[in-house]
Length: 360
Ligand code: IPM
Ligand code: MG
Image 1: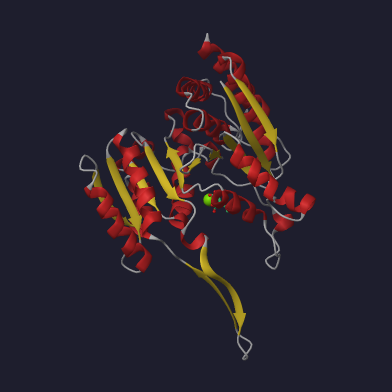
Image 2: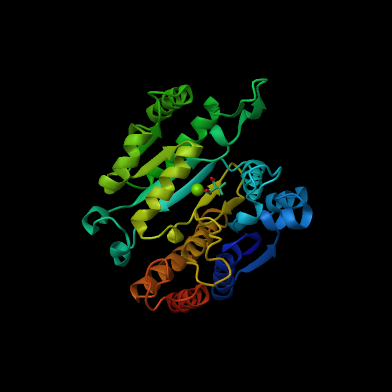
């Protein structure tokens, strides 16, 4: 098949891990006889430096016109001034919103060989296979009003607003139920309904959706309790569905189960086929430029791209199997093992080697 893929490497380690994911896509194209046109764009801090804005209208339009978008990470100390008018993260949020990507899928499946890399006891980790479905274009990330004002007495306040429309909740919970139908058929909806009105609406709408999915075991959990259960009984979860900020926080926590945040991929989906694929980790300025970042989150994001936007299931599974194999062979980047750690490029090369054997 022919596909156009927009590539937004971003800042920090973004370009390093994205280079790995691009090589994987090129190798998939070669092995499976596809034609992928990969086009790179600036987004985030690098775009601020060049154009004064983290996301230009042209880049957004080109992303929307592509079959899929592959993204690295954005941000860094250079753009961290709290008084700055523009921030790299605004580019990412603008992209999610501008592409209508209301659902962010974050699968968490610890590899058996990495269980000792997690601070949790291995017996807690066995059988963990969860999918967090994070609402991505609503909630406190986007609610208005947002800002600051000062009182005559000299005090300054800042405010953000948590806003959810019923239809925003409905579509993401529906998607979670549909995804659960192809898995263990359990959905846990996470909220803070004992305190927040948005969460009470969330619970009500979620219940209505659950009624039309009778084969799904549906339950609700408060976010504080869910945070605890994630590390005390992680294998009890199948699909979690939650709002934008709770999903952000819980998935960083969940990544610890896999040994490193560097391992986790994500897919952001909306109503159109064009999805956005990015590792859940950030730009890691502390190790940027050293060539030591873990490319697995980015490479598994490329696998999700093949599956969800291009409908290439065998290709996606081949990439995932190649990653599994590489880990089974003992290859590790420095986030997973201090001694004999491979560089980003070496790890990528090992995965490519295994992809070739897969195909043969
Ligand atoms: C993520 C990141 C982003 C978010 C930041 C960089 C804006 O933490 O994708 O999880 O909060 O959504
Ligand atoms: Mg995050």
